Length: 147
Image (cartoon, rainbow, N blue to C red):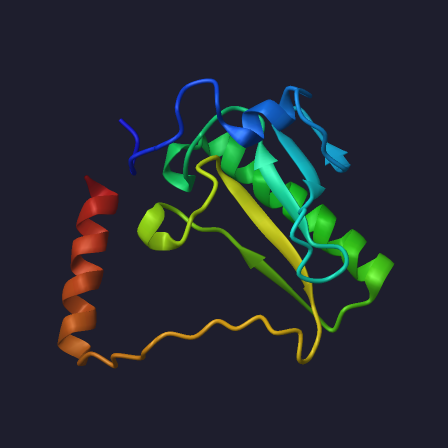
């Protein structure tokens, strides 16, 4: 069962069609499990998306092999971006579910070369819960890992 509701009608996933070659993409790298291609929205030069080839809506729908392959490909792309564009930073971004700000419901990672003043921001309100709350959350996570 999917971890999140996948709103994509069967056969209409944009990235599945891209992987299949039905729609054009500027491909950067490909292996058995992943495809890396230029993001049409180019936040900064060298902004690449790394997607799994099999349709999997979110991180939680991936196999462990697909998850590992995605990170290996992201690292290759990040190294290539560093060599090609010499950015002072690189951001990896991956979103899951509508509330997680996912917009294309096919697992993908953004590899974004970063520069000072490039307009990208990541901020959220710190809640600073007491240690007891952190311990209770950790206990729930440990129980879920064990079960």
